[in-house]
Length: 87
Image (cartoon, rainbow, N blue to C red):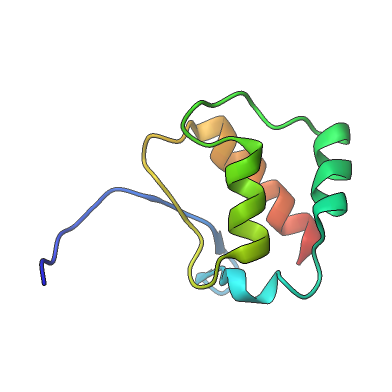
């Protein structure tokens, strides 16, 4: 095992300072919900994190929602806004 400190984007609830757990989204969010949101609020163009990556994370991932540090700040904000609107 190797332990390291890394700089990452963390999607969290700032009221409780709890990291958002993706496992809870699978029950409520559909691909159509994501597409509808993206039509109204287009995701920023970011080659390091695209809409298909986001869909996979929201629909199929479990655990803490962390984004690679190469993801643009505008993209991280877009993700946070989507999560906020769907909690």
